[in-house]
Length: 366
Ligand SMILES: Nc1ncnc2c1ncn2[C@@H]1O[C@H](COP(=O)(O)OP(=O)(O)O)[C@@H](O)[C@H]1O
Ligand SMILES: [Mg+2]
Image (cartoon, rainbow, N blue to C red; front, top):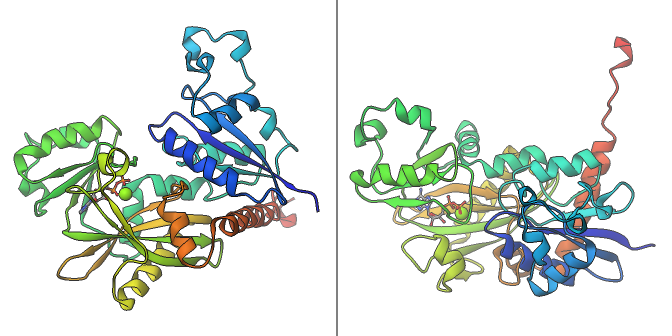
C-alpha cells in the first residue's frame, strides 16, 4: 500500500502558536514513516501560508523567516507572495490534513470550513463541533438544555451590559462570590479573572470584553479540576481521567505557560464511581456538541459535595510531549503513534460517510 500523504498544519496568529509548533513537531515525529509521508505546512503570524522549505525550518527551529513577519498592508515582497491555497492542500495533493492550529480561525470551525470547502479529510471535529467547543456561552447553554451539570452562568454582550443600570451587582446576578469572568470564545485562560469582591466585577468585565464581544460570568466552585480524553466518531471511547493541580490560585495563563508548577496526575486519584461519572458525562458532552474524532472534556469536582460539573470541551487539545490528551491515552494503553493512526482513520471514515450524503433533491421532487 502506498503511504498516506499527511499535511501537518500548524502555527497561526494566536498566542498559542508556539504550543502549536511543539504539538506539530511531536505529531510529525510520531507518525509512522512506513505509513505516512508527512508534509509540514505552517501558517505565519500574519495568517499566510509559508512555503514548504520555510515550513520545515519553522517546525524544526522555531524561527519564522523574516519576510513572513511583514504584514500584507506593509506591501509584501513578490517573493513572499503565496497562493491562497498552497500546493500541499491543493486538490489531489494530500490524503488527510492534521490541523493543529489553536485559537480563533484554527479551532473555531473557520479552518475546518476551509478544508471542507477544499474537500480534504481532516483530523478532529467539523465546523459545528469546533464552533461549539470554542464558544463557552453556547456550549454551556447546550449542556443546560440537555440537563448536564455545569456551573451557574450568565452571558453578557456590551449592549446588554449598557442596559444594566450602573455597576453590575449582586442583585443582578444572584450568584455567590467568587465569580469567574471570561471571554466567551477564548482559551489558555486569557482574559479570565477570579472576582472575590463585587466592586472588582466591572474591571473584570472590561478585561474580558477586550478579547471577545460576549462574556460569561460564572459562579465559582471550590473544585478539583479533572480532564477526560474522548476519541471516536459514532462510538466514542474515553481514556482514564486525569487531574490538573494548578500551581496558582486558579489554572491561569501563567500557570499554563510561564510557570511550571501545575501538576498533572494520571490517573486522577478519585474513586471509581466518580471516574465513571466523568467518563459518562464526557461522552454525553461530546455527542451533544456533535464532535467527531477527538476532544478533551474538562470538569470540576466540587470539594465537599463531590458534585461533578462539565466545564468546557476542547476540540484541539495540546499534543506536546507533556500534554494531557496524548498522556491520557498513553495511560489508557494507546501510545501516541497508535493514537495518531486512529485519529487519521477516523478522519477518513468521517469523510467517506459525508461523501455518501446526497446533494441531489429527492427524485419525487424533480
Ligand atoms: N466556575 C469556575 N469555578 C472555579 N474555577 C473556575 C471556574 N471557571 C474557570 N475556573 C478556573 O479558570 C481556569 C480557566 O477557565 P476555563 O473556563 O477553563 O477557560 P480556558 O478556555 O481559558 O481554559 C479553569 O481551569 C479554572 O482553574
Ligand atoms: Mg480550560
